Length: 402
Image (cartoon, rainbow, N blue to C red; front, top):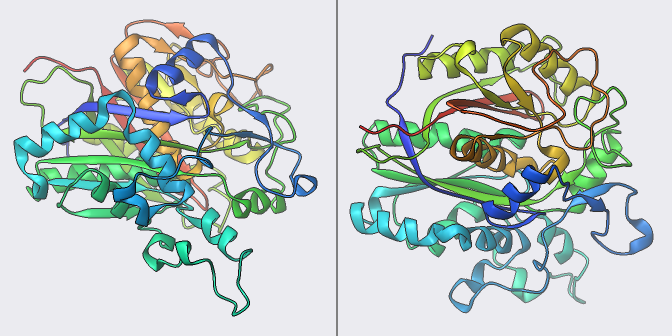
């Protein structure tokens, strides 16, 4: 088992989802148990749109990046830019840059599709010579690391920059990467987060696997039929505590099932190992966790495995829920969006319910709740399980005076 790690303060955090820009819009929807999903209106032509529901962020198609960042213009980076401007996050990063120096702040981003939607569009716009439009010929924009480099440039940072792409655990694993960098003394702070935008490859890919729901997703419901894809961006600033009264990253666990290309281990072995490592690094046990933000995609197998794991490892009083009925499954951005939900639970005492679901699958224990609740939330677990069994568990705790 890993040893406990020194905690890190989360001194700023934000998320932009289908509910709107900033954590206030997300919190309001969670408080009201209100979904941001809508019938699929993404992509052209309309007669080829799949009959599913999506979580779409407005205005990304009409608002390009500002001139100094125009080289990086693509839907995913526009989504990231929208997120960076919310909740005073850029001001918080600027202050950290002043404290530590631009070369002592890392950028660690997570994404699964990055700028694929613009690559898809480019191939529909070939000229007579078979070339893509000039504005989209920059090869670096079409790489997975487009997001990491864009965020680094946008924030005027010069420290290490990396992009993690492990499917739906991508922007959860960024917390682990950043913790190691800070603990090893490579940097003094880190901007972590992620962004994933809607694209045809994902929608038609999940449809081919028969994983898309024809109605708003219903995590852990006995009649669940699959996922609703969403898009989102989110960010957090990690620093050593130094007396700051802020929520804290206490532990993390990372595993890979290596079981199947698309199917998780049937007994949740990798997910449970990630949980064990996160608890060990935090110095906590299952009884200490007040709220669990479940991965809870709404697919039959994933929910079955996770529901059984929670039922056997946590006491009945633990409040657990999936918030994907609110935001949709935001893929590589799911980890950071649900980390923000977890941090909001610590800051406000709101433990969300599982929106859209009506009748829980009998595989679930008493921990999984349909309705929201309030209470003193001391410690939160956030699960992110990636396609093919790449797992990450994060544990956050309330801020304490040094």
